[in-house]
Image 1 (cartoon, rainbow, N blue to C red):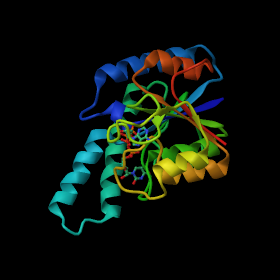
Image 2: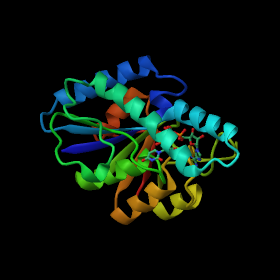
Image 3: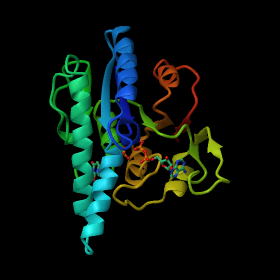
Amino acid sequence: MVTVLSVGGSIVAPDNPDPDFLNRFAALVREWLAEDASRKLILVVGGGGPARSYQQAYRAISPAASDEQADWIGIMATRLNAQLLKAVFADLCLTDVVYDPTAVEVFTGKILVAAGWKPGFSTDNDAVLLAERFNAPTVINLSNIAKVYTDDPRVNPEAKPIDEISWKEFRQIVGDEWVPGKNVPFDPVASLHAQKAGLSVVCAAGRDIENLRAILDGKPFTGTKIAG
Ligand SMILES: Nc1ncnc2c1ncn2[C@@H]1O[C@H](COP(=O)(O)OP(=O)(O)O)[C@@H](O)[C@H]1O
Ligand SMILES: O=c1ccn([C@@H]2O[C@H](COP(=O)(O)OP(=O)(O)O)[C@@H](O)[C@H]2O)c(=O)[nH]1
């Protein structure tokens, strides 16, 4: 049984890598995998603070900055974070970090680590492609926010948290347009793809390890389910 976790860069490397979080996360993952030999995990890792600061530097320097170049810069940040996770799980992760999610042939070991692929979307979309490929019905999307809100709560203090939402309604919140480095609970391209594929997504706070344990165990959790 393969479970797909989209691990937001905002929790792996908010500004710099967060070794305290990674340590607690690694302990939980190891414990959970050891409990049942049939469990396997795909960890799709985002770019976090470094992706944004390098993209911003590029835009500050280049008046005619292109989205494609900005995306490539972000992709490289996701690959650096992914290589860190692969090293942390070296004994369980036997294959190279996946870049092209449509070309994965084998999944030996207990963990597969994936990073950014190509311009036009975020690692959320790579997670959707991998979920389809490995028949996982749900993507667990771990971020720096406990729930999806009716609007960005950092911008709009009136925004209300949501427990369950349809893809149609969710896509009205995040829109259709991809912008490199966009901060949204699940990216617009990935959302359309997940809707078409009939996948569900659970958005939750990645740093809350007990809550993550509950999600992995199929128990009641704090977060937002996007489906239907
Ligand atoms: N409707 C919304 N609900 C919740 N968060 C939102 C919403 N719209 C925008 N955001 C922002 O998205 C951020 C999470 O996205 P991001 O920082 O890219 O996370 P990650 O790196 O984990 O993928 C939140 O911190 C929040 O500021
Ligand atoms: O397949 C991918 C994955 C990532 N990115 C770029 O890399 C950035 C960082 O990735 P992501 O948004 O997934 O990181 P996170 O939001 O988790 O920090 C994105 O904003 C995109 O600019 C991309 O172009 N293609």
